[in-house]
Length: 131
Image (cartoon, rainbow, N blue to C red):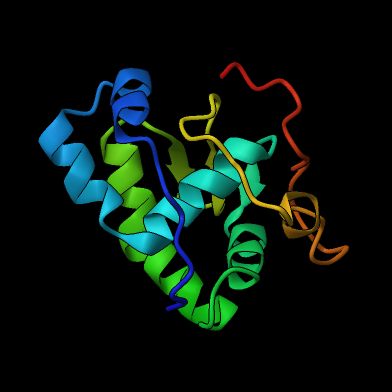
């Protein structure tokens, strides 16, 4: 996994998600989970797990396949358990209706550009942040 950081304002995250503070710190200790929150907070959902994996691979040293494995087995189920997003494992579709972290990255637009034409989603950059 990449050493790139993905800082999160924990107090804001707790306020927006109602996740208890101790559990928020435990969740947010996972770098890939934090990056996932950044990407999903910045794009229009629903998105496919394939698109999400390809997008996260732009931040990460791991392959999209390795990222997808962690997403479907760990990251997405945890976030769904806390009610932060909806994940349909059968269809591979992820929906997060409201941004929960601020997406502040100098390459934000290029990181969220479509990674290929086969994408099953309508993801685009959120322009209506309520920060």
